Amino acid sequence: MRTVSRTRILPVSTQLGIILSVPEATPFTAVLKFAAEEFRVPPDTSAIITNDGIGINPAQTAGNVFLKHGSELRIIPRDRVGC
Amino acid sequence: MSSADHKMPKSLLKNVHEGLAPPEDTPGESVTVRGDYLYYHYVCDGVDDRGWGCAYRTLQSQCSWVHFKQKQTSTNPRHPPTILDIQRALVEMQDKPASFAGSRDWIGSVEVGLCIDYFYDVPCKIVHINSGRDIPDKIPELTEHFQSIGSPVMMGGDTDNSSKGIFGVCGSGKNSYLLIVDPHYHGAVQDPLALQQNGWVKWQHVEEFKSDSFYNFCLPLYKQ
Image (cartoon, each protein chain N blue to C red):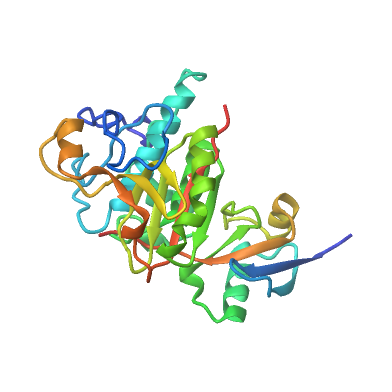
């Protein structure tokens, strides 16, 4: 039984990404933190979306995300607006 | 009363873009939102969100559009969430810590997309551009969105930290306009014509966006 998932995460505007291997049960919030650290961006102001641009609910496991959305994802900066 | 029982504020205006003339130089055909929506804005439900709530308000307008669409096929479509509902949903999704609920913290396109999916089971596409200069590159995609799905779009940036509702597109390339429905209005209820005359609903040329700001657009991918 496969217990480790591999995913490729790219910044939105390039093809140079990273590959993460994580246990399938890893909370997806942790995947975001790992990816943000690798790209040296703050996790709080970053988000991971699918290659088609769909936002990903972080309250699920990495395995669930990769099963639903595939293993190629994108990291983007979050906009934050209020005034 | 549960959040789901919350009714929409009675005084909200509907479809405030209707009747707005096309841009002055009319660079081409315009395509606008398809279907009904309510215009949510600062303080419209009694919550004083001036200075922090604009993205929540654009999200509520988008939710009202989905509500009206779902009303065509469902007897009990969900009313648009309150600001507190939105915050609690983001906490439940583990996108925000527990302290976020009841705060005046800002949100953006990503949170807006997560919430539309959470409340209505409608996935949202996030389109990112590095600079306002790149908006012309996304005009074809935005045009196609309004032609096919027609849901209102939320736009946010970083140095441009005001939420904008995008309710239409006109033109192509660098001679294009976006139809802005601005959630920052507060005050006595006006009619749509007054909102348009006072610039709260307007066509904005793509060159008027900030070149030093990145932008994200949130496009609800509603399917009948």
